[in-house]
Image (cartoon, rainbow, N blue to C red):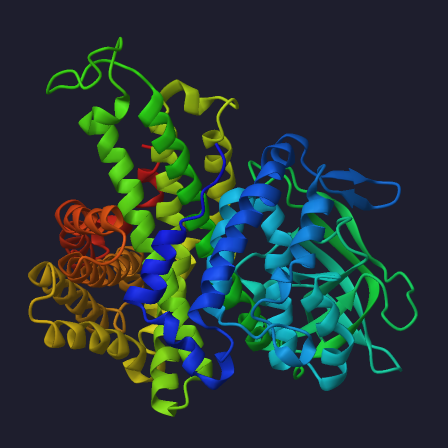
Length: 591
């Protein structure tokens, strides 16, 4: 089926719930009027359905191909043309800085476009997606000369960018990297080493690829404190000379086959320092945190496409009779959507997808406030929420996005296991999102090990203030007591960590993943309460899209009845501690 952008849900969230229609009142986003936001939603939806989606299956079937003679990579049929149209439409420049050719629009709109692109071809979306992170890192940490050299072409989409971190002997533990940067006489550096799993490291979509590479300077500490960041182009911008940064081969992957995942060999390639020596991790985190939010949108995008496919199938597939009596008496059987178990799977997809979209756009809206609001205290509070929720968006949206793709496949039964239907590709493509940009376990550890204690606990206090303020200001809020109970569980879990983690770090490690889920479910509950409240008000006034508003009220009820109770056993999981988890001795594993 052809993708249908969730335009009505997006407008409801952005305009009626989150207040993003007021972003144009901020000087930085003066052009982001409601009419422009609506136009972006509509045009991005058309691009996704008409240009990007047709390349998805061929990308999976063909994959990328590597030529060992030329060390070059060819992308699947149609990718170059689709990428060209994406670039010509200005989509690579959407929220990029104006002074280098960007449109300077809100980050929230990029979240919207990211979801649509990832719904229709995750592999193709990886190329401009990683480029955007390179733009942000160079803009925040690069010298004026580097900005002038690279940003305009990256923003225009004429060039693409990569993020080169992982090496054969190290993934998350980047202190173990061996790539070296030796100073040259002209102020550049000779970069030597091998990086693996580099998305877009080599391809034929553009004429030049700009690598952001972590490496160690001579005499640097042999830890993460000794890592520096370098920009290493495929072709040197001043001379056009080929830089010895070559693709040594492609990884053979379970999914996202249209995305070129490369082994990259830097053979004395010329690079330039980004930021300060030995401060590469702070510069790279600018790129990584942005990438983590983008990966969250990947999980959501795939889940939305899986829902659309499985819903369409359930409406058409005839199988058995309704338990309450025939609903299609003139046909041989009823459509499977009448069966409670099928509805259970569809409802879980729909309600979680809409809740996850709300969480993502709430975070995107806070990101915009953090950079554009005139009040410093508002900017700081918004930034606190973004920092706290970034690992939550990445982990929860990819965990549940993948689960929802699996539920969609289950709705199709045996058909879902075949290549005749797109669900099996969505499941394969979605699996990686829980792994890269830091596994979801790493995201949970970042949340409990770093974010909770940051600024003396100020980040989590900002979240508690957001939720308690809502409950205080809205005594008639839908599902107020259920939300209040979830918030109490989150507070108890936070207190348990504060009391136990400092004495035993393994307690934090054992509690991290369930804690992240409690936070995600609670914040999504807060947003479902807000959505149900707005829907009820509009229905009373006779305004808005009645089926959408009535659906929001039913969906909120489902969320609080069927999904929110998970918070109770997650709290018990945390409070019972690490003992049974860590009790096995080595011989117990194979006894």
